[in-house]
Length: 498
Image 1: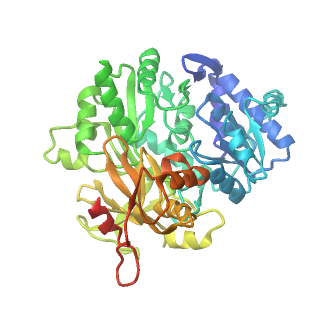
Image 2: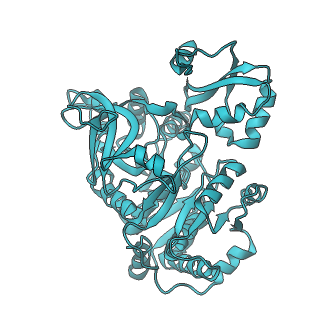
């Protein structure tokens, strides 16, 4: 079944219910939301877009993001959402690799794509093409899709310099949405989903269950994360749900204390995307109350591996409440979660090993990358690359992350991607990138450099090739990188130096 059917049903049953807001201003009810998406679908079909084709979305958060997303689905195509913080060259690779027929863009990002050699038609939501799409003949109904048809092509940060496209199907997203109701939170038609985190990631995926429930969708006028704006919108609407990275939660706590705000109107804050320190979540609960739920997922199993319930986050009576608060919770209903060896053999409770996941929320594979798929899907299990321990009660605790992933402000940075850019400079002989703990962002990117290139030169190089959040915050000169007998750089030694 096509996910867009849920929007069509809500528009038919509750068409006058408020659907899309820009700040405090309503821009569409559910009838209008569906009508716009259906017109976008009709226009896409007139441009030659066929079921199964890929269509990009390179936009900042705004109500038209959801219109474009559901318009793509109504046409039977697959969406390729691209993080708005990415550099144009990074977006270029994603558009070319996915074979996108065209890409919806927002002002400021259209130019970033146009300056590349992507060769993909840009449809700026402030331009004439999009205006024509709004006036196009709407499709009568969403194009029928099979459960395993592609719905969302999500590009991970590249562990080998290039990101991989995770194939996310209609079945996966439906399972994620239904598991949300059973394992994460309930949603009513009086609720409001607030999009302060990028809609290209978890925040946007969480629109699905809010459409199913007939909740309203609120995009901040700032287009992003502004603590005071969030508090104002929550107080105005009431019953607000939002998705946030752990660093966003800690910043919200700090600013709320400074401003004397208590988060009135915040009903649920789901946090994920990086490590949440126990002291930080304790402080957040003490200030805002029992509004927090944690989830653990990956692009390969979006938002659907484990959940730490609202009760567990606020509980201070269980003998092991701190251990549970340090965990990422228990398996969600639609998956099995085990700890195993790199070969996929199960380990007993309490053992340290790789986190393995199986179920209908797990991807079928990577886009046009059978080699990576074979390494990641072993005997039907997703080998997450994350290491952890599961206790006898089923609570999973992440112990470390494989592949040296850096999570800064909730965004993933893979060191090799940055290293390859820095090595483009002729005066850089060697480089190794690691994460350094940061009070506000969780981690920050740091580069150990062997060579004579200046900081300004390296900054300029990074700014020309990758997103700003991936650029190192410090370049530390070193005569030689520490290596083992096989010539592999010992990043553990570099972290000790930090």
